[in-house]
Image 1 (spheres, rainbow, N blue to C red):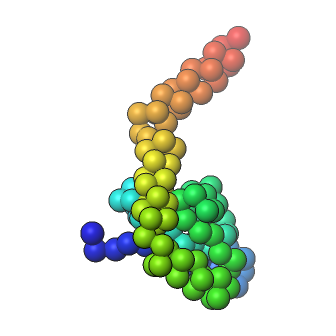
Image 2 (image 1 turned 90 degrees about the horizontal axis):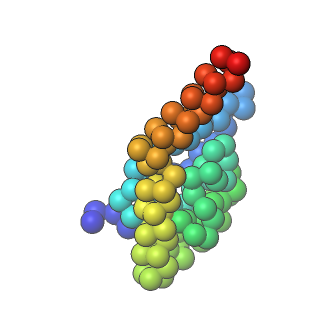
Length: 115
């Protein structure tokens, strides 16, 4: 593997705009990489702090550095978090499962409209 950790910091724009779900984080998680990411927007819905990576406050370079250092130093934790990250992607972003849920929601909506 070329990488051992996926790091992505995110900050709001001057007008306060923020990102939503980040595909880059999902891609890192899918290949067993633990994340170090900003605790902003929808990122906490993707990265479970302490389980699949570490969330750090926006613009807190020291927290980002410490979290990254922990993953560099602790090989077993890094591998454990990477495995948890992949499991989360397979569980939460499964195309077949999500498509089934969407079908059920649409069928329920159509049923309630036709009544």
